[in-house]
Length: 249
Image 1 (cartoon, rainbow, N blue to C red):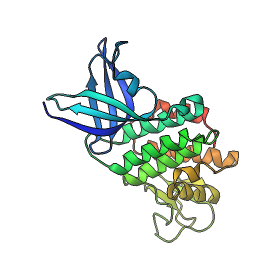
Image 2 (image 1 turned 90 degrees about the vertical axis):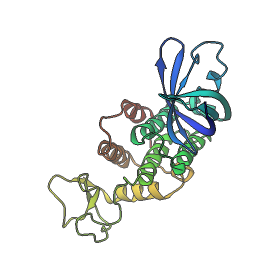
Image 3 (image 1 turned 180 degrees about the vertical axis):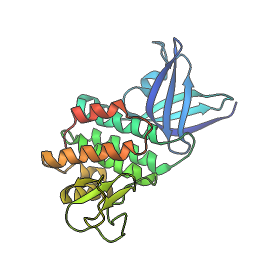
Image 4 (image 1 turned 180 degrees about the horizontal axis):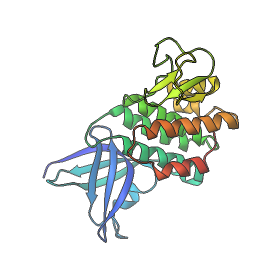
């Protein structure tokens, strides 16, 4: 049975029968993969300690006819401090579940792997109290990698640069409209919120972690992230409710 090794981040797990688990990884070289870990729920399992919590794992995977199997796992980098704070853990798990929801299996994209690792690294580095900003920046940058990012610079109707004033979000058209082109069903967004979105898209995650926003901007960013994701997901992710409840921008 052919095998391969790769670096992986655990996106989520699912119980399979009494003693087994199915792991969904995002790997550096193979994209998202699903593997069966036989006996991983037993107390004597040697691989389970390497796959719990948040971490960067060196995995060995055996190719199978129906589903690949996990042949080995070794924890290379632990992001254990994320678990010290509920809001930080909610942001980390929420982003990993967004990756799972938006990506298909075995379509490699190393930038997604690097973004996931950067998100965990930033959250683990002590950015307590601003996990929400890191989460929203990571989501926006993920949408950009996938070619799903909203247009933030030009009106999606007339293509002229957006003025330094409030704009209107058109989910159907995938971006913002200027005041002249605004459709009745569009959502009005303040100029400051648009500036924040541009900043979160362009800056490294550690820089995003230093931002502090007013409660009003906080509410707008939460609303916009929900709308952007809803436009590309078949159903709402329950995990996003925990991110909203336990994180603060």
